[in-house]
Amino acid sequence: MKNGAIQSLHSLLLLITALIWGAGFAAQRAGMEYIEPLTFNCVRSFLGAFSLLLLIGIFKIKNGPNRSLTKWQERRCYFKAGIICGTALFFASAVQQVGMVYTTASKAGFISSMYIIIVPVISVLMGKKIPKTIWLGVFLGAFGLYLLCGGKSALGAGFGDAVIMISAVLYAGHILVIDYYAPKVDSVRLSCVQFFAAGVISLIFMFVFESPKWSAILECKWPLLFAGVVSSGIAYTLQIIGQKKTSPSLASLILSFESVFAVLTGYLILNETLTGREITGCALMFLAVIAAQFKEQTAAKQH
Image (cartoon, rainbow, N blue to C red; front, side, top):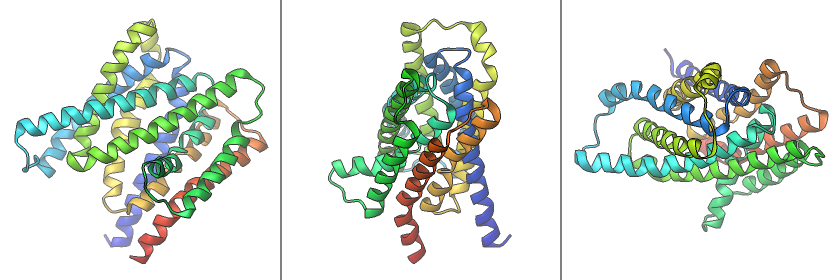
């Protein structure tokens, strides 16, 4: 198979990943009809962890252990990184899941995508410089967010949109934590440990703040299986394979279509609709995400 065909195949795998992640918002929204947010995240996290456990053997054969560390040092590194990343993931996903109770999957998908712009903005606060295209993305994203969520008289809708926006900030923080630990350990193992950590924390808070019922969890089996196994295990694997032959800038641009697929699946599965003003807001937010990637795309082509 020629290089062009191989790259196209890997790009297609990333597009499928974006489709799965976009549909995951519909699964999250549907799950709120059966169980409470922390219960959903608890089961979903453990399902994601167990599905990734099936992959660890394969990746261990290919990559082997980290020869620069002893077994004890490697385990301690995974434990520390997994706890920190899992805690960050817990707070981000818990806040997002609460927001899903009060807003639509379509709007949640687009608002959540703003983490792509929030990450470099946080970097500025940490003393780093960012390109002008990022500021263009911030402006477009802020205006698009206003059109998508602003001027709502219904308390529930406005509250849900605000909560999802907070979760986008928390996901940006989670990405920065992952960015710090990812070069130190194998990404699949780290993801598995962080899902276990997020599941354990969710389990504790679930029994403190909610009243989980096994019968309700069973009724929610399909949204949970999709969010846990398909969205976490399968999509994560496709992302790893797809990014092997795809530049990071192109990969992030393809994965940003997650927000578009969130709208499409919300419409097809949940019968959600958007007004003309909200569609315009979505378009501006999507342009903001593309603008945030434009600088990297240009640099990649020059090399």
